[in-house]
Amino acid sequence: MAGRGPAPKDPSRRARTNKDPAPLRVIEATPVEQPELPDFEIEVDGELVDFVWPTRTREWWRMWRESPLSAEFTETDWSELLDTALLHARFWRGDHKVAAELRLRVAKFGATPEDRARLRITFAQADEADEKRTTPSRESASSSRYAGLRLAD
Image (cartoon, rainbow, N blue to C red; front, side, top):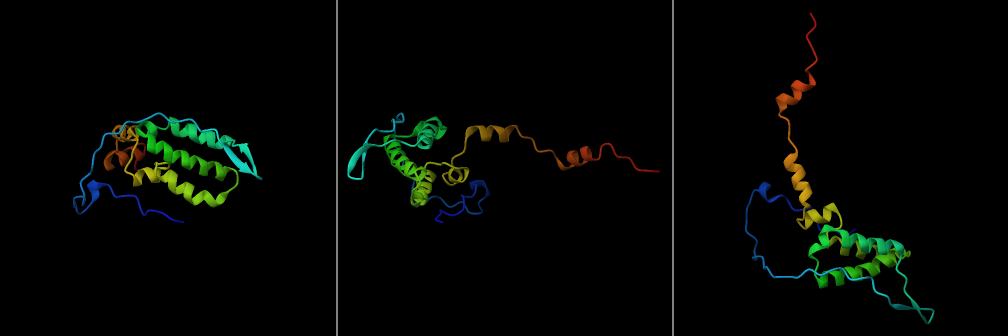
């Protein structure tokens, strides 16, 4: 199974702080709304028939529309994801030969927690939860564990 290696280490934990070899290029991009899944015909046994998107693929497409990740998708992002939707449809129709390509393509969009870690994407609510979490000190944790115990005479 192909992969891209382990998730990158948190920069604050690195021993070396080498700078990136190339500076980050910042461009302006305009996010666009998700297009509808298109209607088209495919050839089946020499005849053209309307392509019907599997229900699971329609749900998958809606999931991407509602994902916070898609808020910044550009026209090219949606185009790539639309091509991926065709692979998704083939997969859910039983063509499992496309599974590896499908997995690689959705990984580029941050579909799983591992993918998002590799892409250095985190959801804001996770940061807020970390800030709210308090770690008890060793002393308070142990004293609360043994609070009701007494030495026997």
